Image (cartoon, rainbow, N blue to C red):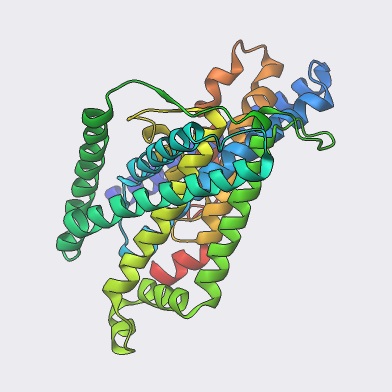
Length: 358
C-alpha cells in the first residue's frame, strides 16, 4: 500500500511539473509576443520579410524530412545517414553548376538558367540516389531482422563514413555555388520581401512535394509502398515485393534530399562536407513534429519549423529585451517542438500513425 501511494504521489508530482512547464512556456510565448508587437520596433514589412525567410527554410526542411518519415514508415528505423545523402546531392549540384557556368549557361537569360538549374537538380538527385542505394544495400538490408538498436548504430556509422569520405575527397573547405544573377534580385511580390531564389525554392519544393504526395496516394507503386508500410507479411501474401517497395522508398527520399541540396546551395551559396548535420537534425525534428511516418506531417512540420525558426526568436524574445535573439533560434525551435509534443505526443498529424502502430 505504501509503495502504491508513493507511486501515486510521484505521478501527481510529474503531472504538476508538466502542467507548470506548459504554462511557463505559453506565458513566455504570449507575453513576449504582446510586448514585441506593442513595442512598435518592427514594421509590417519586417514581419513579412521574416515570414518569407521562414518559408524558404521550411521548404528545405520539409523536403529533407520526407526521407526520414518515409524510411521510418516502412522500416521503423531512423535513417541518420539521410543528412549526408542531402550533403552528397548538394555537392553533385555544385559540380554540375560549375560545369554549366564554365559552359556559359548560368547567365542573365532566365530560361537558359532555369534549364541549367533543372539539370543541376537532376544530377544531385542521381548522386543522392546512388548514395542511398549503397547505404540501404550495405548498411541496412542485412540488419532488417536485427534488434532495433543495431540498425541505429549502423545508420550512425554510415553517416560518419559518408561525411568523412567526402572530406577525404573534397577537403574541409567551403565550396561556393556560382552566382546566377537574376536569382539575387527581389521578386515583385507585395509585402513579402523575397528574392527570386527564395521564390524558386518555395515553388520548386511545393511542386515536388505535391507530386510526391499524389504519387504515393494515387499510383499503384505508391499503394504498394503504403501496403508494405502497414504490414510487410500481408503485403507479401498479396504479391507485393517488399524489397522493391523499400528500395523505391529510399530512392524517393534520396531524390527529394538531393533536390533540397541544390535549393539549399542556391539559397545559401555554400557547401561543405559537414553541411548535412544541422539541416539533417532540423529535418528529423520536423518529421517528428509533424508526426513521424506521415508524409503530409513531414511537409507541415518542415514549414512550421522554418517559420518558427525565422519568426519565433524576434516575436517571442525581443519584447523582453533579449540581445541577439537570432542566435537563440535553435533554442526557440526545439522549445516549440517540446511544447507541441507535450500536448500531442504523436505530432501534429500523427494520430492515425499512432493508432495503427501503437
